[in-house]
Image (cartoon, rainbow, N blue to C red; front, top):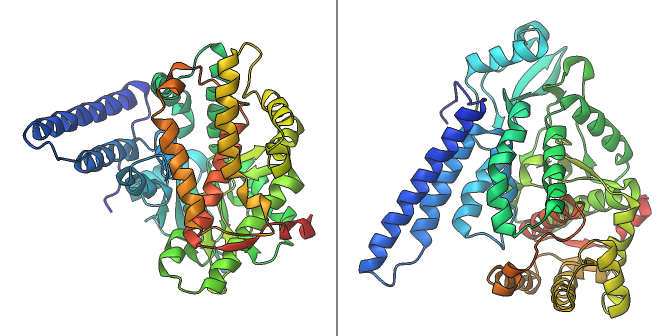
Length: 435
């Protein structure tokens, strides 16, 4: 894969790149409609493929929060055309790396030393490039190490990148009123945290220690003396990325073992620590030869306050979902229903969330759950398709729900997708024995 010698870090340079990408997409639509005029049976498949490719190519050169958006969207398998899912999934752990000279220059800037001054050996070619940083192999005192280096300018461009995306998001999600700002502040705050590698090392060590007793779950050791605000040094962990394991594995018992460790890990964090690894995509997990799950990235940690945790999980209980008065009371607590809602809005959103929660909480309603169950995934897909085309929903204020929904829902949807890819069958309440 061709390396990158320069990343646009200024607002003008990054905006220009997005404008160029927009022009390419406009050209794709012109080609599509020109062909459509002569062939009424033409599908959007080619258009989706070209748009997905052009958008991804534009974002991958910017890296940072722009590419992080593509990474997040790749997890929304039931909401996006397959062409986008396939292309954007590359943002998880396979994007063009920084060139060796730029790596050396960046390392010196961030750490005050060149790599060869800190490590016995350092491989200038990265082994894994993602949205915010890339990983290199190194050794010191006989230990095999992984060194994560943040891309230059990422932290400084987050606010301006989100400002460019904001008008599009407001139209897409029909956000109205000043309260919508809380969602953008939540995303901006989390992205800024992800660029603070000192914080990430602290979070990594704390959660690794707290979860160390969960079976079939492993973590690297982190080295603060070889880390800084933009560089992290940790143990090199041998294993396959979760997506590679899924493609090659034919052992259902091993898939269940990995899936159970993943489920226990997340439920222990959610219910025991009241904070959770909120970036569950395949690039953040490895599987070793023995079938142990290895968690290797703790940049995005979402704290779950009781004011959200309590009503959220009260609605995970089947008897509460089916109690209309209790259900609506919790919707107000979770800011889904608002005091200024009309009668028709209360009715509409109550019905919408009743349908959604009946589907999404179904894994909690039994002792075991098979995430390969196509009935479960078909229900999610049908629900998504129904409301993505609902004209009535477009007319209403989409500014709904506590800001905490953004990362908690993302966490659960990402977790469900990973377990579905594994086709794992898990014991839902086994994690309680580790609390």
